Length: 73
Image 1: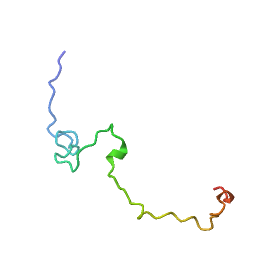
Image 2 (image 1 turned 45 degrees about the vertical axis):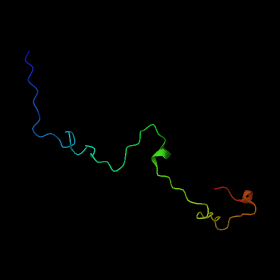
Image 3 (image 1 turned 60 degrees about the vertical axis):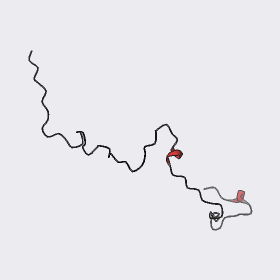
Image 4 (image 1 turned 135 degrees about the vertical axis):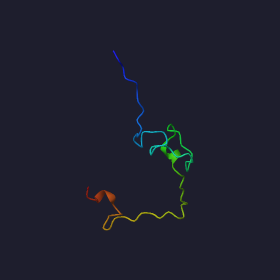
């Protein structure tokens, strides 16, 4: 039984070769975060001081005196 010698493809697909379009850039813009860390550890902390936060306004026509009288959605 003759087994042919494997041949190297002279024109491989660009995404499947080393350094192709799927290659990770050498200079990443940020360090990678291990996948075992929670998502909130991967996100940038954005804390807004209480004096900047504004309370939400009730819906127009809402019964703010007796919320139990509101019709259900």
